[in-house]
Image 1: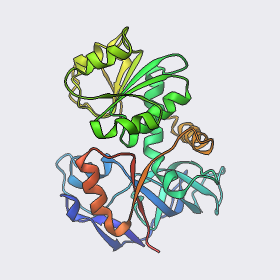
Image 2: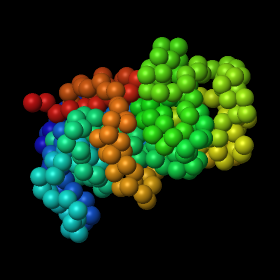
Image 3: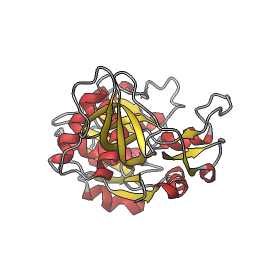
Image 4: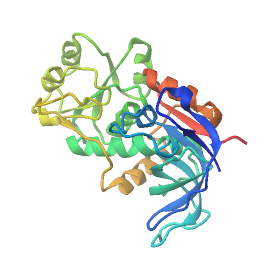
Length: 301
């Protein structure tokens, strides 16, 4: 089967589209005929060797951690979906003609394949971080980095929960933040002053998806440091900020929530799509930062 692979760690140029052996699901997994697979920062960190812990690459790596597709094989013990069902979800090596998913939800008929693929990793991440800080009706949340793939989804889901959302971005993305319902502020020096002009008493929670603001600045905006959660600042140290990574045990519920929001039009994900053969280009854009929305890879033909 064709897949986007790399044989050595390095820059985007190490990616290529090649034939690899087909994969098959194990117990509790499903296999899908892939319709689309999104690009996440985790992909280029994997490709660059940042996750290798100094170990050499033994087998060719296949990029991709989420996908949408049609179920064509069902593993032992799976009873909630059947061959022919349209799903999206989380797995590994998903930028391929066939991919195995560990967690999935049914794709609403009204949701495009590429949009569904883009919703996997960012959807699970969004629900996880908002649950950690208890964002809900009447609260005010600051999303630091609101225009990117995760940030834009966090903004919209927080709004759907009834929160007021302030979000940061660069000058070119201020209008985009308004478009998705956030109160925009520019990141950088004097960020706290700009936020406090909007919310004089501070905010109830901060979700940091960019890792660019100093921890003490974000902590100064909330009642307690534990109300700042980050997915990007691995140097937060003993600031009290909570770093979250990995997959929640409630990932399935998170994907079902995201599917409902997409179907109801309460969540819109902007996309740039690339054929598998141009995966290196998509990785280069993702690694450069300042992405608006999500980058999605689609099979040829």
